[in-house]
Length: 307
Image (cartoon, rainbow, N blue to C red):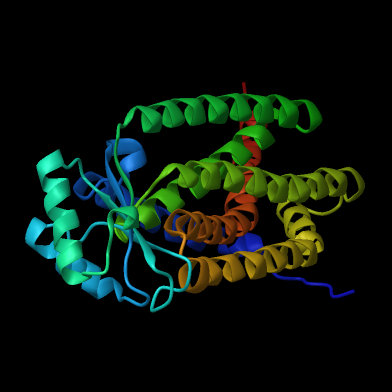
């Protein structure tokens, strides 16, 4: 079995600076750009059309250009993102009935073989679903956080619990920051991705915390910093193997959704998980354990201080 002896704790300040810089950039981006919310949250119009045997997304955007909709999200149903697949889903801001008719007429001019049966869906979607999903997701997240704090406190200690929660908030915010910086559209699957990331990250963190707790019991002659380094190194093979196997699956899903299946929402879901798994693995090693160490160090100094 491969054994590592990397001094992770010596790089905790560099990790804090790196995370702090990403978070700062994310805060600036969120203040300036906000989040690119999809119609699940903002409401809008969905047009589902069947076009020619082969078409390019650029052709669809050209048709939409006179209506100032060339930048709206498009999803090819079936085939890949370059060719293949006859159907396209257009997600636009709220469009009145006359505008929707003009758009459909423009598509029929570009593809004269289109019939009324090829207009598969034309619906206005309200933002109520998005608000309900957001509220329920925050409620689920709050319940999960409280349950995790209670569980970790009972099994370990309160300092471990807060360190783990801070690492989770770090992971979730970095994913939000990436989506804000690159202006990637957020829809309901993104919420599921965030909740999945939190579950994955806390699992990785708990494994390392468990090793720290066990090693503290049996290695009294070593310093806390050395025990943390030993514990992370002992868990490293497991963390790397778990993360790599998960990433292989997610990369496969992302490629499939991007080039073959054409599901925009699922592509965003896979992308959020990719970012989150990488960030979660990083935070379990470089964020959660150092936060607990600094808190433990501060507590020890307080106990040694004269009354």
